Length: 136
Image 1 (cartoon, rainbow, N blue to C red):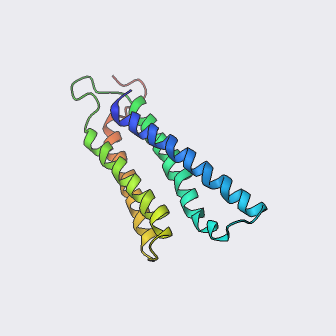
Image 2: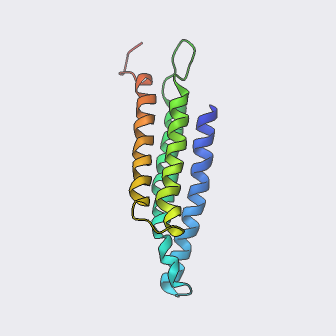
């Protein structure tokens, strides 16, 4: 498995564990309230599971499974995939985690913008590797 895929998948599994842990704590707090401010972590829970786990896992598998080029570099412009990796994780932290510590209304939109830029960067990276069925 190529190195970027390994990092995408590894970090997605870390986000999965973190998101499930937050979700379990939120569910427990809903049934037996023990710490009401815990509900402030709901956005982090959503960011971890949707973008951290699901989107990141999709990107890692797409990097790995998409057809390679016949001539070097076999994976194309890998720096775009690394850029997407950095932007996505920065967006998750800015939109999900930082609002827990810093009260600023621009945090979440900035994080979401970083996540959109990550998706665009990955799409630009992956597009040349996609071919129609039956194409050589």
